[in-house]
Length: 104
Image (cartoon, rainbow, N blue to C red; front, side, top):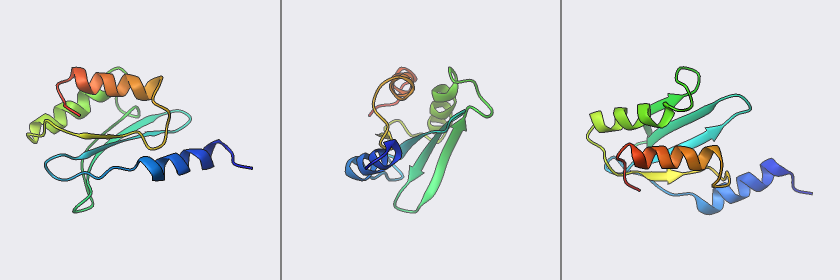
């Protein structure tokens, strides 16, 4: 029997996208208490920018990441929802990233 996490990992493998320096992959991770966003360059395997609800409120989470990416002159991203369904908090983060001026 497949539980919720195993189904998420199967979806994650199926929908995985690649990022680069020019167009990084923005990854969403949800724990029980916090949300984490990372902009990753998959070619070099480096993290370009991060934001989390450990330091920021959930409303400012996408804005902080967008500001960090704009400081590095990055305007286009690839959104990786990590197998989470595209509704609720994940959809709100994607909408906030678009409202902050990032294209994907």
